[in-house]
Length: 230
Image (tube, rainbow, N blue to C red; front, side, top):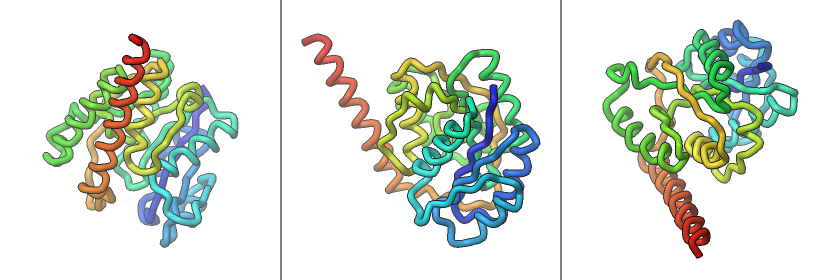
């Protein structure tokens, strides 16, 4: 499997270079999508050896993911390992994703932090349990940590996606669409890492976005069931 790293980044000039260098120890290329940063993120990423794509304005993590994945597959890669730029994902664990994809034949491999759930803030753990329950039901696949952004996505899964979101809920939409398209989804244990970084997730706004997303897919499934029985 020919794979590269895809790293969405927004105002992460202090950490992105370390993530890029770590990814390049295991993969031949790293693509950083600078999503409208106002600091030196782009400069730091390029200096560390990343291929750089810049959004002129902040469009959201989901939009950055789609841009990066499209570039990876246009460049001829078979798969991409997605990592956050803030250091919450250990690039040293990249081989786990490659091995899991190779041994299981999964189209998507998602990191699972639940084996170290004691290191996750309680609110995030509880939120994760709720969101993972709904995403698993809608995807038709058990996904123990649907909110983990550390994941491998292959070309086959991406080609089946028609993403309609652009923010943090895109990570859930990817799994729902892939599961519904018949793609195999696996999980691998990864470390739970929290430092002094400040989460950019807005508890109210992004929760509402997730509710709207799940409601839409629940309704679409009901519509499909009704049409099949009609």
